Amino acid sequence: MNTSKSTKSFTGTSQRGDLAEALAHAIKQAIDSSQIADVLVTWTIEKISGKSGGFPGWRELSVTIAAKT
Image (cartoon, rainbow, N blue to C red; front, top):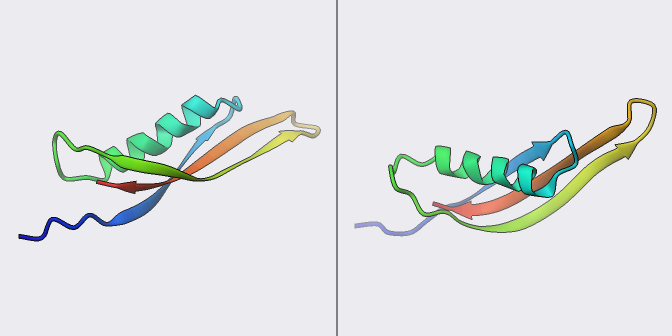
């Protein structure tokens, strides 16, 4: 039986500049990628980036996580 877990990257974005919202989106993507109904996702933040200001008033924030499912 193979119990090794693969690590994959997932990115979540908030158009309101909300870190918690962006992180929640990334974690949801990791959970949704699993075929297991009651999956446990272990994750670490790899990158946080964003856009602020400018003519359109950017407030975009993205979080990329490395997750094991």
